[in-house]
Length: 229
Picture 1 (cartoon, rainbow, N blue to C red):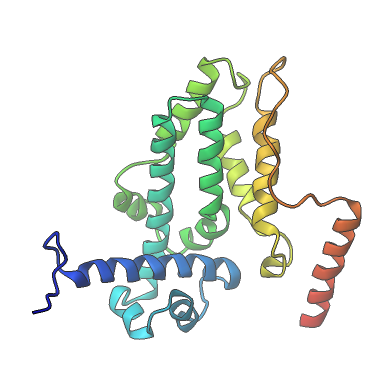
Picture 2: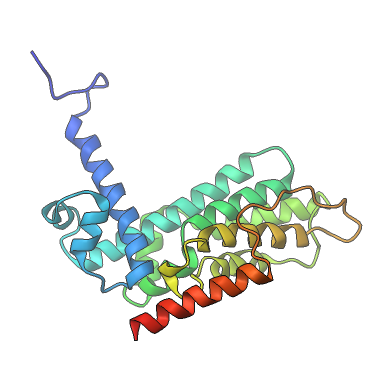
């Protein structure tokens, strides 16, 4: 006889519901970045691979979806910072790994869109912790090891993540956008090293946009913009 229970005894649908919720939140985050917070919910359901009824069952009101996305982003940010603290290797490399993970969360794109529609307090209440403290601990630890400029402060870390996670002009028209942001983040993190530090050995990731490549990218973006007019 078949059973609806996996080996751990938990109802199978509980895992399915959790997976559906994660897919919806991930899709909503990307759709909000691409199309804004008033984007059609049908498009979110389509990208999540679920029916619109499933989306409404998980998030009856659009505000519920806003809170869900914001809470997921900040919870993932906090978890990434705590995991970086647990890394006992090079503290600057731990900071680098954290910043790359934070960049993938689209922090600077999605949070400004949502915080005007929901309160920060209710989001923080759902996170179960504030990312500020573990991020600051990462910074202080790297400075104590003499591997980070002493004049670097918390905002130099978080504000750069916010800036780099905002899309380039043209939004979704620039497929290299994410990879470029990660490349530029590596340049920035190496610049946080104190004077006299060994030459950085980090290989720059992402596409190298030299002058000819920039001209091609510019023309593509401008061409798409003209087509939309």
